[in-house]
Amino acid sequence: MHSTLNRRQFLTAGALTLTAAGLAGCSSRSGSATNTTSFVKPGSAAVTAAEAKRRRTGTVVQRTLTAEPVTLDLGGKTAKTWAYRGASATEPLRGNVGDTLKVALTNDLPDPTSVHWHGLALRNDMDGVPNLTQKPVQPGGSFAYEFTLPEPGTFWFHPHVGTQLDRGLYAPLIIDDPNEKADYDKEWVIVLDDWLDGVTATPDQVLAELEKGMIDHGGMDMGPMRMGNTLMGASSPLLGGDAGDVYYPLYLINGKPANDPQTFTAKPGERIRLRIINAGGDTAFRFGVAEHQLTITHTDGFPVEPSKAESVVLGMGERYDAVITAGDGAFAVIAEALGKQDQALAVLRTGSGTAPTKKTTLPPTKTPATASDLRAASAVGLPQRAVDRTLVLELTGGMEKYDWAINGKRMDMDRPMRDALGIKQGERVALEFKNSTTMWHPMHLHGHTYQLPGGGPRKDTAIVLPGKALRVEFDADNPGRWLTHCHNVYHGEAGMMTTIAYQEN
Ligand code: C2O
Ligand code: CU
Image (cartoon, rainbow, N blue to C red; front, side, top):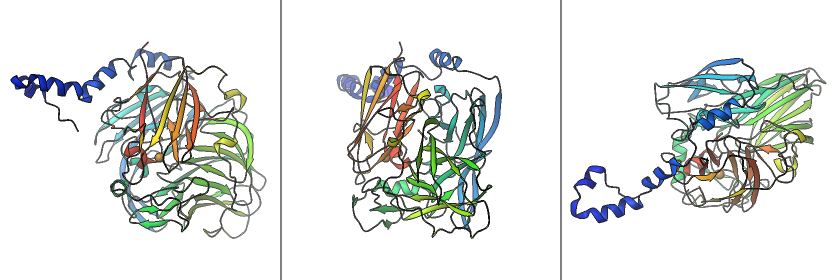
């Protein structure tokens, strides 16, 4: 780190003026000061103008949310953790597209926090990224979020501070389109999570263990090996030699572990829309319902051409909506924790029959659905046009130094504009994620949805496999300062994040 002279030292340095000027010149603080002047600010007129263009119903949905310490009973295990009063996996926030969502957040945690509305193309100053779009909400403090719900779909929210999302601080945000023809009888929100907080460790302890560094044993065929709260050799043919780094004692569906599963009830023959959300910190899930076929209808909120599959893979942050036709009996709803030899379980019951147990597994499929199998519904595909700007985002770093980064630069959330990449409003932008690491990464973009190549789905989070590249495109139509990052919370916190910022016109 540079040692920067403070102003008084500088003024009294006298004979050392030349040296001091040299130091000041190379300190990155002055660099970021020049940076911030040329980029659109979160509270600027451009942001207000973009908000004014969103369609509005005039309805206000008002909620209060308190982030607070709680004690949970997870199938007989007591876990002290942090969660929201006012929303949870089974208590989503919900509104219609065009409604104004007003959320009064109170922070009763011992640490600062924020709320990020994952996947929404919302006004920049409500995006919930401390030091970039707002000040962190201090312990005892509060913040009033207020924004127009921009698109219908399955979204969720979580803090954007440290590893907080790997605690109980998350919940779905479902945005309905009153004009959508509902081709189903019922719908269920299904939130998948990997859980350790208060059972084996806190997420902060896990991060500290990871930061000590590990030897990359990816590709071993012996199954995952636990070392403290970390895992080595959690390999999955779907994700590569290193599917995850963290040992979780529990996997949850809607906050319930496999020994105390949630039971969903329906009538045989009913068509049920499932809104599946991966809220995990370090686990990709393969999701399916035993003896049922999924018809995938949406991903990350946006419709796709309906596509049938036995199971679907969700990286952290991804969502899929799928319709099933309920059979007669009791069936396992399964989320296999890829590479970790464990799974989350819930029960679908439409008749008699013994409840499935954790021993029920999904039939092995070589080819579960992933985003690359899907095509955007014609209404949401980006219009064909030339790309104005390509940003290459090389994913770098590894387990040994735990130096996950983008283009070799590790994000410092105290100075999130330091390495910001500029774009201009109105541009078609291509993001080229080039994964130079030996691990897969779910890459998320704030404030926009990009489109996968070849008419692929509109998404805000997509898996980039080790050694592979993924080129996506989006339209720069939402001015502000937006993060793009790996949604593995430990990778993101270690530095695999960068900022994409609109330049002032
Ligand atoms: Cu769920 Cu920065 O995002
Ligand atoms: Cu990652």
